[in-house]
Image (cartoon, rainbow, N blue to C red):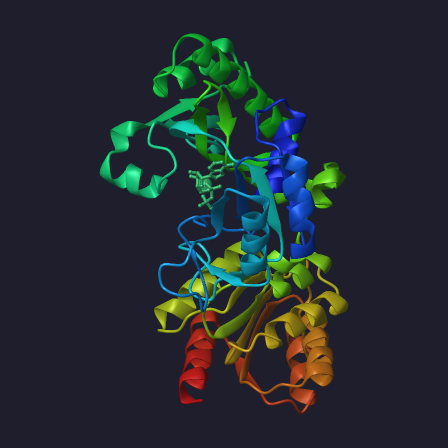
Length: 398
Ligand code: ADP
Ligand code: MG
């Protein structure tokens, strides 16, 4: 789960991490009050969307050369003006895709005087099986480009989970950033606090870009992106409370309500499968036969008829879906349950695209008989290969 920058800074502040003062607003009428509260003399008005690259992004329909999604403002009037121009508009950045994202919240923050910009992130490093810091002196810019053009400027500092964070990790971070003296001490304290936040809140990613050194010699996090491990959210009701569903895919939200493992993809063939391995094999074989899957969906081992119905509704609600492939191996899951779920769903939502059903395993004959007897226009398939070829042919023919 992702959260907004201002929320991420709120979480980090609780752990003693240095961030600027700021006020989040939802309406331009709140801008002047926020500016007065912060006092100035420089403010930064920042679009809050779940995507980076806001500073260099542009608003849809704006004149060429117009300002981006992060704007320095030198007076309260300018703050208000920028808030009016940004709220409700669609911001397009390298991370939003061409459709962009509507800006519904702004963060008005005190302006910092920047002497140097660094990059610092933390992630779960599969190579070492622990949390690692990734730092670079090349902050404020596109870190992927740095990784590509000058990988020697990126330093990875793994932390052994058995020891947790130690002073030498903080010293390594400071050294990689070229800091010494009082600033190295700040970097050490910062590293320890960030590590504590990362572990206690079950984060999967924390990215500070830029981490800055201010003109007065303070380290400060000017941007913050946090992703949390969805499997651990049950123990963080405070974090769940920060969820902004308008930033998420509506189909994925619906799926999570029914405890379905669903990921929306870009293709045309909707897939309903049980088991993650079989689901991946199904996506692979659809691609092999020249089409693209519209989703990954694992209905799970012991799905009920209601769950299958919900899954089918989510798939058919996607306008990109031009055909559906149901591929079920009945082990714990029984084929007749799937068959009844599919039919119940078709009766509720209708069926306007071709549907190929491949059932195998427990109660397979019963399942097939239910589908045959339903009078629905279902294309039966005998194995995975057959099923994939039939749905691809049906979609291409349509
Ligand atoms: P994004 O990464 O989405 O473009 P950032 O929060 O990193 O958004 O802001 C873009 C740039 O704007 C930063 O690299 C920094 O130079 C500047 N900036 C952001 N916040 C402030 C601030 N409070 N004071 C001064 N400059 C800022
Ligand atoms: Mg940034």
